[in-house]
Length: 501
Image (tube, rainbow, N blue to C red; front, top):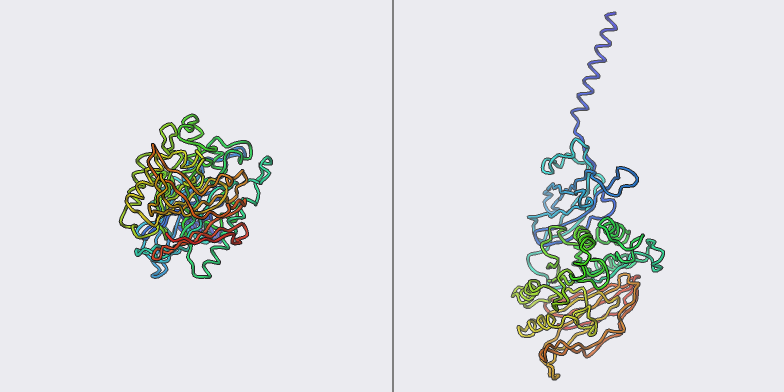
């Protein structure tokens, strides 16, 4: 009897001890790789880097698409030169479809970093825990994404090279099938190869600059046109999770800078006045756009923004502020900001890019381009010419074709002013709709009430009309030489042109 009691007591002691041992162990949350979208570097400066990703979305039942499932973003940053580490968490709210943006601040200029990043599903008892209460030791980082990047130097570079373009449908060319295919992803595989080849030649790719129509809700959604926020989000999830574009954005080591155009906003040739007629659909489109394209997500101050990745760029907003009845392609506030930006002495002797989603000179009879808003086009060009703002180029899209030309400014009577400006049109990541190649011209009148300028080029190449193409724009701030290279979906060089700005 006593023997049995002793054995039972020993077993009880061992059980309690084991229980206490388990309870003392810390619960670790797995940092999982983003299942659909991300990680995407959105902005890079000497002291900051912004990255975004989308967490897991687990439905309550088979019919639900998104719901209140707890996600948190987790990031573990290491400065490679001194092994200094930092831990950050960030919100991935159900209301934002578990899309989160993290801005890493107070970085050291010109330094290489490694970033482990992903998302975690805290247990229900920890779901309400404040983000600031978590620590690095709460997480298992084994399965997290790893990103490598280098902050910009405080000394502006002498050269730059960016990959540019616009307009990608993500359905098959047989649009009526509504099926998701590989064709709309091939161009990004070519970009990956292009970046790798450039790196072998010691050429850095400073950023990916994409200026409009990243998604086509009109005619690309599986069941008719997208109208609700869920349907717009679904387009971004599917479009940005295709293998080659996802690999490109997550491994290129440079920011992907995006602006929107008419199709991102809803449908062809949209403007603020048309948006006002469909307020719910427009709000759905811009909410989804803000989550998946804007550099700081919903915290981005304006729909236009500036960036300095190798070259100074002003990304315009030519849809949300466009009022045809007032002759405005942008608000006066944005115009004043653009005029101040080009005039700033910081970039006086450097190459500058004005990024426009629609053509500036090359489509002289297209009312959807700047030609339909001649008063503001003259305001901008008059500002550039009168202030002798040189070394400027305008990079444009929308037309589903590609061309470039140096335009000389003449008086209305045809006399030379000595001013030149370059336009580079690149449109057709996968553009299956009709292109505007037949309307491309080498001249454009920017004249209002008899005053203004005539712009004309001495040479205009044949317009490229392939479905799949992208453009590498490289330049030297010292010599002011710019090289424009157009490539197809196999990364074969279609054409190369050199200009002196």
